[in-house]
Length: 136
Image 1 (cartoon, rainbow, N blue to C red):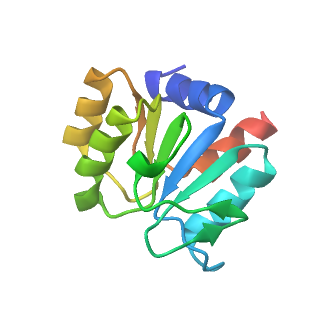
Image 2: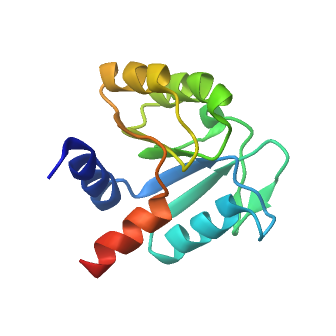
């Protein structure tokens, strides 16, 4: 098993509270569909979007630093150029991992996260990875 496969398996098995950056209440958005799936799979979803007050029955926060409790994983649905500061925030709040959705990559931010002890996944869909492992 490769390092990335091992990281994905570990994240999916142990990270139960997921802050979803860019989660929209619009049902047609990928962030909504993925978060709805994860919530139904038993994960706690915390929406991060300053334009929302509530998504999927959960209070939305403007920033990661505004979340009152512990976050295991930060799942990023933002363009790659916005990833660096989000990774910095994930490190500050003590998240254990950062997941950049399909099409989202920032190797420099990923390296920063790894140096801080976080697991990192880039350019992968967490829903697809979860489904794939459920079938195995």
